[in-house]
Length: 137
Image 1 (cartoon, rainbow, N blue to C red):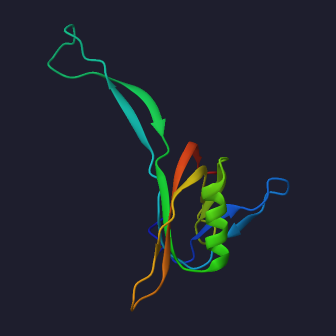
Image 2: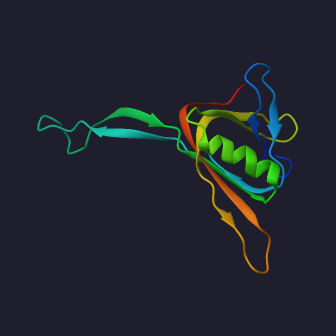
């Protein structure tokens, strides 16, 4: 598969646990993440040879996902509810066509609204991933 444009990609949130249905979040014009990282623990000792540091893998961190959207009350209410909820929510980035998806759970950690005098009013959402990330086959 070659390169593809991001147009048509959707950011979705799970609307109901009973009947798992992902709902599109409308008006998104930019998105990114998740951005996983892995902690590296320095295992170098005086017995290490050849002058090279030695590392072991520590814990993994799912990082964050973010998106910016044109302000709309429906999305603002849903994201504020997720922000106020002490339970993580399920999210999906769905690529266009049959190009796949990325699934993760997380907490809305930032939710600034930007209101410029002569430009579009926007909401920027940051979601801190909790647990792992899944890219279904």
